[in-house]
Image 1 (tube, rainbow, N blue to C red):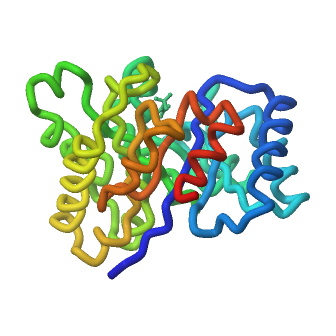
Image 2 (tube, rainbow, N blue to C red):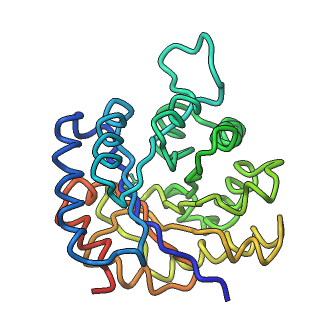
Image 3 (spheres, rainbow, N blue to C red):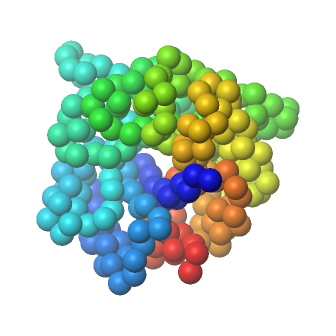
Length: 257
Ligand code: PEP
């Protein structure tokens, strides 16, 4: 049986300037240092302008915390004002990049085709994408959450070779649960995360599907994380609001304690 190391990733969204980022990561590292937390991988996804500060801190103090960006350009360089390329993120030693977060899909019109191009851009530069998928409330009410989410998985992974797909992280984030305080039940999370794993097995192989980490995201807190993590196909969480409170984020990371 494959053991997948859970990944707890904090998506800071458009919060914390670079000075606040330093204070926050210092707090996290201090709180996590007294205990071996190898069993869980911890990552933060700060705004672009914070990445250099976070890198300096992580490198300098040899912290185990990983970091990454919240978005990446599909292009490698050129006249794309305001965009940040994979090579720039790689230079900052980003491990991860979120692709297709629902807020990017909703407010910036990101399509599955664009997400697919961004996933490929990340791999061109050795960065692991966290591909975000999930249904809105209308789709959930119509009972179409599984086909809707699987279509996003298919689109995001289109023509992606197995050597790359085996390391991808997929975050199942029902849009109606993001930032709303309304968390999916553990059974809701399992239903879709399980379906995503089955689809990975169909697209690639069972062996590959067993390796891929599938996160749940949507109003995760210290009080609900253990029940969500008890689901067999949930391998971590993408955490928004609760990741801005260092104490709360640490409690989520230590959900097994
Ligand atoms: C997110 O931003 O991906 C997220 C899940 O946010 P929240 O935890 O605040 O719902």
